[in-house]
Image (cartoon, rainbow, N blue to C red; front, side, top):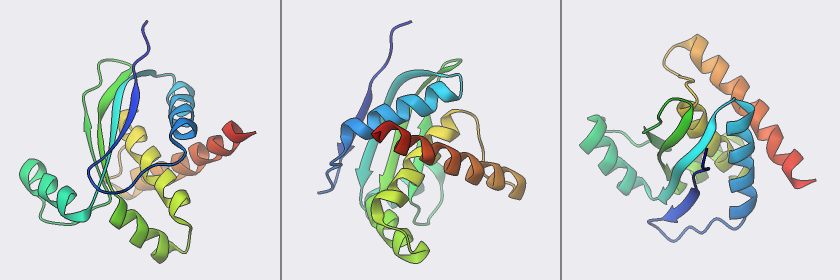
Length: 144
């Protein structure tokens, strides 16, 4: 099976400095869930850009940190993940964590949605948080 590509784009002035580290980490997380890497695009943007998508496609008139569009086929993950770097920055400040740590949480949150995890019920939210923590730890392993 041919492996897809994980890409990072910006619709604002944000530039992911550790692109290759993030790419390897996302691949590792997908494989740890017994899924296959397809074409996944991460698009960094500002609040207004993401709000426009939220209103236009999801009929939600609220700010959010992430919106993911899952185009997966079977166990091969494909899709677009839009991330508001403004929301990530504000959430990092509110949760008293650094920006990169919060960015990791949001990036992997989108990937976990593609893996089938949800966050609508309290039970699902708890599972999602546990999975986020578990997968964030894999990033550090990648660095060694």
